[in-house]
Image (cartoon, rainbow, N blue to C red):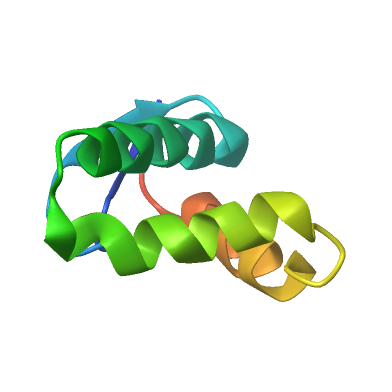
Length: 78
């Protein structure tokens, strides 16, 4: 298991997301941003907008995805 924060994934806070794979933490970040938007957290809105764009245009966002995959791989195990 490894940990990445909201900030490491492009968000504004240090909430920790834990997962066995990079996809686990990316999906946790997506859920976090959805909840923040629902709660009216304006600080997270730019990151939420970016995440929505990545889900809608995955090929276009492959660079970000590969960067997160690499960053996750380089992290130590928890």
